[in-house]
Amino acid sequence: MNQSSIPPGLMFRSFLTVASSYVLTQILFFGSAYFLGSLFFPQFMDFFHLDEAAQLKMMAENPQAAIPIPMFWWMVVLNSIACVAVGWLAAKTAPFGKFQHGIFLAVLLFVMFLQVVVADPLAKKWMDLIYLAVLPVSVLVGAKRGSRGFIVKEDV
Image: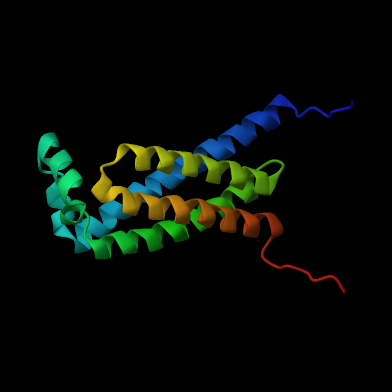
C-alpha cells in the first residue's frame, strides 16, 4: 500500500485552520450575544450583574428571563450567517481537503453543542438543540461554497 505523506508544515497549517476557525466561531457567538444584549435587550446585560447562584437559578427555572426569545432568534440568524462565513473562510484557507476542513469544524461545533445540551437545565435545552441543528449545517454550507468557489461552471 502506497500512501503519500503530508508534510508536517501542511499538517500544522491544517490544524491552525480548524483551530482558528473554531475560536472565531466562539468569538462571533459571544460577540453577537453581547452586541444584541447591549443594544436591544438590557435584561440580558442585567443578568451578568447577578451573583452566580442567582444566574444558575434563573437559567434552570426561566431562561427566557435572561435570554429573551426575540434575542435568541436574532442570535440564531446572526450566528448562522457568521458560521457560513467561517465555513467559507476555513475552506479557502485550508491547505488541502478544503471541504473536509469544514466537515471537521462542523463536527467540533456539533460535539461542543452536544455537551452544552447534556449539561444545561431542561428549561434551556430547546435553545441548545436549535443551535445544535443549525450552526454545524451553516458551517457546512459555507465550506461547500468555499471549496467550490464563487462561480460554479456547469458542464456543457
